[in-house]
Structure formats: structure tokens, C-alpha cells
Length: 241
Picture 1 (cartoon, rainbow, N blue to C red):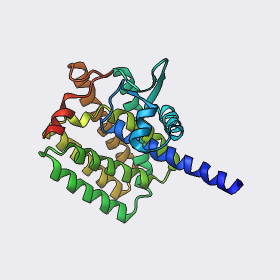
Picture 2: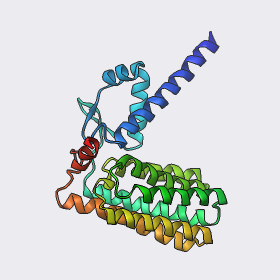
Picture 3: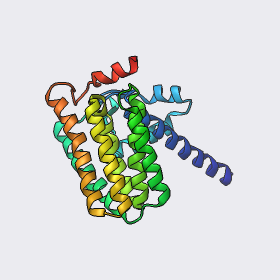
């Protein structure tokens, strides 16, 4: 009997972790929006599991800052204002620039090859309309640098501050010229890493993150994004293409 109960506990933890991954992905890619309520019963029905692992998953996402508990409403996707987003990008710049500096003394030949290939794929996407592919390729590039930094603690911290701005998808508003600028930052980072120049890699990464912050803040100030609730119009346009 003890072994049976232990097995069930393990299964519950697995189900809650899987549910957390799926819900997190839905938040980041825009299927659920800032301010939107998430109901345990509906999520359980859609995912085909009981409400217990759903409840545990929602608690995990609350600790990550993606959800907040609202009185009489349960869990809702957390909303952020301009100041919140600016602070998160400041933290991201600090952490990712440190990761780039560490990576410069640790990056492998295989990782450099993967980064160069990513730059080529990113360049090929410029001018197209596959937003998801652009976001994915950018994520791959940055995750590869994190892996090269060889710091699980740093990786966890970066992911916590990167997931939140992704909810607002600054890439939606990037012009072709801004995407090309992002591509140049990537190329400069690869060159710095290949030379083992940690100081240059740190500087380029910081500038790269601040550039992304600038695009997002510009559209908030111009009324292109209601940072509290609305989905950027560009997301809906991209999905209709």
C-alpha cells in the first residue's frame, strides 16, 4: 500500500509540472492575455486531469510572477505597467550581460557553431511574417549563451525575468530595420564570444536588451499597447496571416 501511494504522489507531481508547462506556454505565446482569469475546472477539463494538479500548477506560476491571486476571482494572468516592464528589462540586461561575460570563457566550438547557424536562420526570417519563428530563434540564441555560461542558478533567474516581457511580445512591433539591428547584435555577440572577449560580450548583450526595451516602451507610450490588459494588435494580425 505504501508503494502504491508513493507512486500516486509522484504521478500527481508529474501532472502538475506538465500542466504548469502547458499553461506557462499559453501565457507566453498569447493564447491567454494579461488580466484574463484562469478557472481550475475549465483547465482540468481541457487538459484531462483532476483539479488538484491544476491547483498546484497555478501556485507554481504565481511564484514565477506570471499569475496573481485575485480575491473572489482566483488566478489571473498578471498585468504589468510601463514601470514594471522597464524594471524587468533592466534586470534582464544585468543578468544576461553577466551570462554573456561568463560564456566568453566557457563557450565550446559546438556552441559557437550553433550560434552562427542561429544567426543565419534569424537573417533568413527577416522580411517574412513568421513571428513565432523569429521569437523562437531569438530564444534559441539566448538560451545557447545561457547554456555556455554554465550556471544553472543564473539560467533560472534569467528565465524568470524573460518570460514576463515575452507576454507583451516586443517583436510584434519590430520593423525590418530593427530586426536587422537585432541580427547585428547577435553577430557581434558571436564574434566577441569566439575571441573570448567577455567585456565586449557583456557590453553588446546589455545594449541588445536595452534596444528591445526601447521598442516596447515606445509602443506603450504611443498607445500601441495597453500594458494592463490588451493583446498587441500586431499579434492578432500575425495570426491572421
